[in-house]
Amino acid sequence: MGLSTHVLDTMHGTPAAGMQVSLYRTTDGTAALLLQATLNADGRPPQGMLIAHAELVVGTYRLVFEVAPYFKALGVALPEPNFLSNVVLDFGVAQPDQHYHVPLLVSPWSYSTYRGS
Image (cartoon, rainbow, N blue to C red; front, side, top):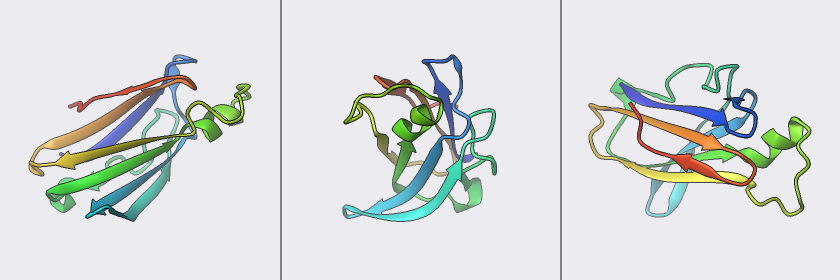
């Protein structure tokens, strides 16, 4: 239960180890930083859950995935400006007693997300 994420690099077919991600709580258009993490070898935050079940509350949140720096660090030649620099996902939590898993499938040219389990 709580809030979690997982990033898969679809260009290389691997977890996005080393990608930076930031989590914000948003209120009336203002974003307050809750945490920043570097994804581990499995493409997940090292602490596991971004927000534990007991601390997840109804509201809106934002995840920011630093896509271009991740691919540049792997030596991928990207145009300037990058097609995708950051992937920003704004989402709502209506039922904090449930698990909210927000996976990201990403390449330098595309991304996909969904509410996972």
